[in-house]
Amino acid sequence: MNQFLAGDTTGGNAVGVINSASTFLNLVAPELGHAGHVIPTAPNGEHTEALRTFNTIGNILAVAGFNTKNFTQVSALATPSCGDAPQNLFKIAVTLARNSAL
Image 1 (cartoon, helix red, strand yellow):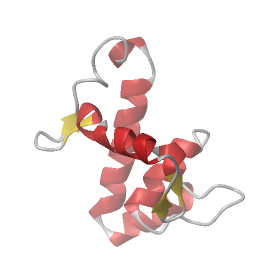
Image 2 (cartoon, rainbow, N blue to C red; image 1 turned 135 degrees about the vertical axis):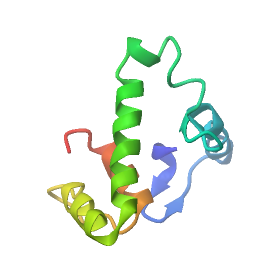
Image 3 (cartoon, rainbow, N blue to C red; image 1 turned 60 degrees about the vertical axis):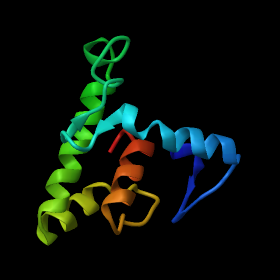
Image 4 (tube, helix red, strand yellow; image 1 turned 180 degrees about the vertical axis):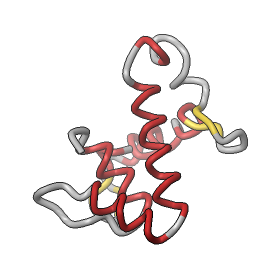
């Protein structure tokens, strides 16, 4: 989905946007509160950085969503040197996904 995001909007090839959005349930199991079946299993899981990165970003978002003080701190840490501070959890997630050095 990252490649189809521009600011507060999505755009690009409609089929690509739909396909990327449909992968959501492969990545997360919202009813269980953890990663979906694709991230923790081969060829991902412990075989790549995918699960560790996914869990790290999830943990950061959980901390940021806990209270305003945490959100402010995480937003400041997630601000790229040449950009603006993310103003919501979604923007923090996008910023972290696009700037792995943060």
